[in-house]
Image (cartoon, rainbow, N blue to C red; front, side, top):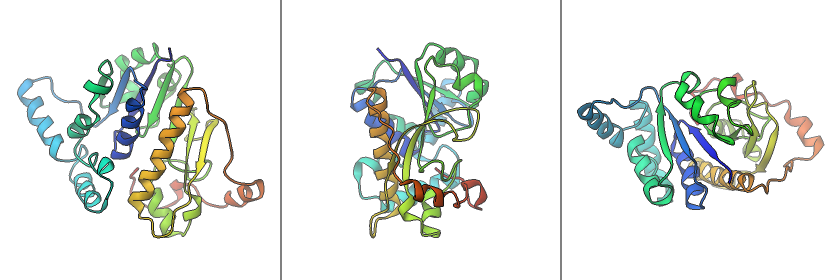
Length: 258
């Protein structure tokens, strides 16, 4: 049986994908959550920290403010429930019911965590849903490689950034999509495994577009784990050539948010 794990910075969108996987019976051995600092081992401090994370964002006031703003406009209740603090987000996954054997690991630096590296050497596959750029000691640890779910149509918009706002600002709504690719030493440069072209619908909100994009990403990952993935380019060759003129995310001036 395939042994796989997930590493993530555990945004609401990432949680939506993980939730879908475990409810479809795909149970990761480890969920490695990347955060600025792990919860204290002191029971009292751990309780205080967990309560803070439950009602606020995991990365401070700015994310907490963004989560509240998103909750006000998101209509889908199943998606809205993940726009809360990290501890509450974990509760919403309900791993005790759907994947009781999954172990959750918090790490402040996934690339320098020897425990994480040791765990990954026992795995067939590592799935990446957001977080730091991984170093070779991590992405080469699983026996069959590491695979990243990237919410753009690669090779467009490589790197991390506020992609949906950029699509709206530059009227690139037709170029929305999501890609599952193998992780290598570059930034989103590895072999493309699967891809879906998801143009923005008329009058579709950015929040709705984000949800729809990641739900399609869930399907890509599920099919990949079942060995049913088939590479299919969303554009004709002549269109792909023209798309090379569109810059990478790193060339835009914007705040990082995935």
